[in-house]
Image (cartoon, rainbow, N blue to C red; front, side):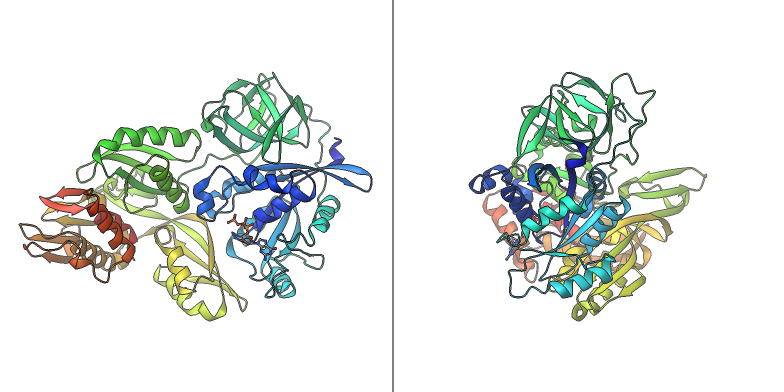
Length: 597
Ligand code: GTP
């Protein structure tokens, strides 16, 4: 089809505002997929993301539409909806000329929506506001339009109202995409092939499948291609388009089109999101497309198999997972307390949770996670500099001149009635407020990333009765009075529990962690002394007397799910004890540590 009849667009929406439902409806109303085939075809692969209510990727869909006697091709390019995947969102948007901004008319604008719309505006996309769920009695699309204008700064005089559920208003959306989203622009001076990789994933049968947008030139089956950044070359086995969730091979794709390529690629690390595909042999003449960066892990933690015999299985699992995840970092670690395991790096907390879940569900591994950490920049007294991700890597204080930690711009959207407690939370986490607007407030804070990677989101949700949303992006690294907090159990240092914390927060952390350990460590034949210290200075100390007693007796008031988990594990006779200083410490105690204040 001529390039003037192609429309490449994505849908930007907050979780649950109806992106998947609208995508389904678009496919159905354009006759791309019959209604009864929808579920099986579209809602397939990633169970975990489904069950968690998060669509990480829906992939792409090509639709053919007849409008005013012309044939149009509409390519819906999906964007992941979560903060951890901002870079991938930006690459997907770079493959489009327009975006539908879908907002739930019963709810309003959410923080992630703003973040993604900002990316879309930076990418110069034409943005079409769509108010969804107007079939619901509580829908107030006019109010939400006003909110979009105020908070996001987008003109809503032409906003569309629809119900993705009933299909009302959906034909108008299709019309509007054709009218308002520009056709791909073609640079006539560029004949050489340049394709933008906006997604890539591993398929058990085909190897890596890379999704791309043809920016210049064209691609054909049998051609020899090169990934500019990775430098890897492959022969194109198959190219094609996605129709209703199914791959349909074609022989050639040209400028403006989107499609997939299979070329016997073994790992997504060779075909990274944001890389440019060029024709092999042209690398000296053809420049890469702008905007490529390698995904860098921002959150680190230790993952250990609860069964020590499972180390090899866990290693295999990581190898397989990383085939499909170029951002996953892992390396073996041998901890005195936890045995053989892995140091891991993730894009963010959700990424970490998804991997942990997959290890447990798909690979049937029981996993112990240490408290997540950020990466610190350490300026040494001798002038050299180093970065560390784990407290144990911190050199002794006399060798350290300065420690810098990453700061984030944190945005929260909070209904007025819950503003107080939410602002208090951000202040507790060392975030001076920098910006405030609206009745439903947009709060902006500059907060150390370390303060939001643990339980910040859960805490925000509970303080706002579920009505607040948040998003963050990294700003820079800042020097702070950071110290290493260590924990000794009967004079033996429990390495996995060491943490870097701000001096002003050390006492609070110390009390909490010694308290948790006191609750979780069962009484033993010997008395147990738990101490938290900075250097040699002990700041919190707890004692467990040497008597036999019920392991659970101390759990009263504790977290009920943890208690249940503990019971279940004991019932299964699987309780894993770590010997630290001749004291048996349940793995749960180490896990619980990640729930610090
Ligand atoms: P994630 O998949 O979690 O990212 O969410 P999403 O944005 O894709 O939302 P999804 O399409 O899954 O819709 C969320 C919920 O809202 C589902 O229960 C839908 O059935 C419902 N929903 C979506 N659109 C409408 C609508 O127009 N009207 C009504 N009443 N419900 C809708």
